[in-house]
Image (cartoon, rainbow, N blue to C red; front, top):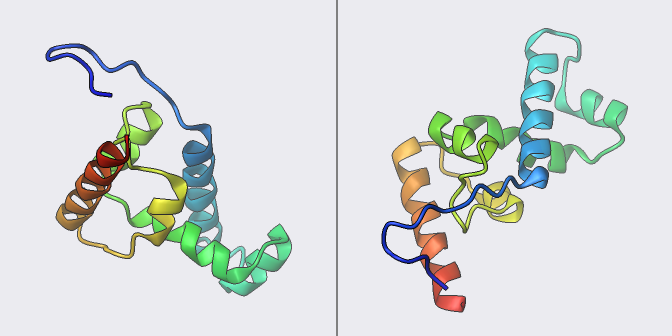
Length: 110
């Protein structure tokens, strides 16, 4: 269902996305500071698989405006944690195109 033309979309903060972003940037800071030498070492300390940590760390490569939209609860409808973890594109302009196509897929499913 689409909002009427000119209607304001209410904010809908996705706590799962916000938590994943917070973890990703925290882990990145811990690695960059030298507190942990490798992802494997940090993953062991956190009690998670290194492969999962690597996928979550990719969230730190999201375009700044996408991160801001998520934190403000204004993320695109197709911006889910599962979708963002699959996003392998580092170029910000391409990230926007991919998310827009995910939105179109979401709209088509409704």
